[in-house]
Length: 168
Length: 413
Image 1 (cartoon, rainbow over the protein chains, first blue to last red):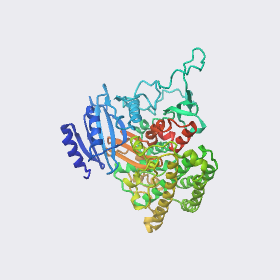
Image 2: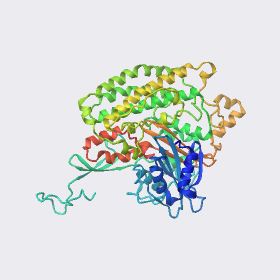
Image 3: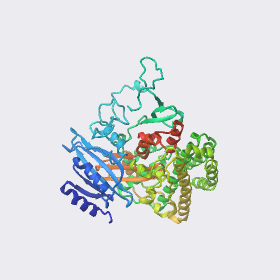
Image 4: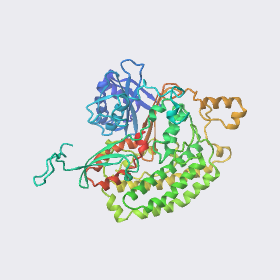
């Protein structure tokens, strides 16, 4: 069976009904959204189903959309069926006040550090993760730096003491 | 960890207040000469044997993903240089192709072939370092010194094209900043002429060397199934016997026009990884030769093409900037980053020297990416290091580390 976007969509709709949302194909990749609570069920289905077999987790990361109230943080999974060479993108959205997402580490060992990185930068709480602690930043850090409320330094600021930087 | 801390046997008299631990904690790194980069491993060792290993990463984290959120596309290229700095041109090209995918830019065939030449040279330079370092870690230094002069020649070719050597910032969105000079082609020809002999000698130094074989065969082995589960890609995955190569499965940059084989191993150990990389260098030479022949076959105006016609993203020639109004406007808009890009989400990946290097770019229609995520292959597969080294000797763990081709810059982003 050819894994066309139409087939993927009908197969997933058949299984998950209305929980499959905003399915679309952009730049050649089929992408869809599912409720955050169902992420493991969908991943497991995509992994096990003999026709689908998405068994390679290419990438896992998060995105922050501060304007979407109640669904500010997105976790994006890029999955790959290596036999048929089809890639798909799965998204889930969670509330920034309670960013709980089930961990995919039981399915994919590669999710371990990628989830730690996502926690480190966005504060997504991966429920059930074997060791959810910061990975690239220092452990004492008390904020999640890639969230949009932390802007990069304004390059035109003038309140810095130049002497501290060996100038002036 | 708890099973490691156990009571000592009765005949051992430990001093008062001792915790009774039977193993030693050893910090390997972060600045250990054997780790070739800023890696820290906290090893729990029983004599020479590792019973538990924990990796610490992030020592050179530079927040590239955050920085990229405020930069126009062309200013992100220098950030990609600093991921896998042993093969920067592949990162640069991967980034340009990601942008081109988002912007819908079609590159001319000649540009694609020139890019293939550069990317394969970078792959050779990367594998060359990795394989010769595996040799150094097993006690053979001569190979490393010998091949270094050919990495130098590759760097000279980069220099002819873009002016720099390590962090190359090579190429632009749509093509190259300038055409390849005749000197670049001369050096390329010299490389194609001399390198096969050198590679043959290099392989001859190690391939059937008894010390090398005994040090590497069986060390750091992983099964294909575990490797896939750990997200291995590139030569490390192919050494386990899985023939996954992005250049073949999802061809980009006209890789479909050249003939080459994907070498695979079977056991996924240090020796197989080393062999796969050597064979990939032969294949890269094959690819470069074919691409170079195709470049030479262009005639007339086509033989001078080195970029696509995309005035919104490709800087106009300096001469026109000084004399023509339109060129001046484009120059100003590009440099100041005042060009809105289309909204959309793109994932593009290239076969980097150590695995699938992916760029996940989200644009909201602004002038800078809304979000940019790098899929950094060695960050993902370094997770397996603990599993690969548990039970092995410390000195074998060092070889495993270098044969995985870990690059701290890429891992820590």
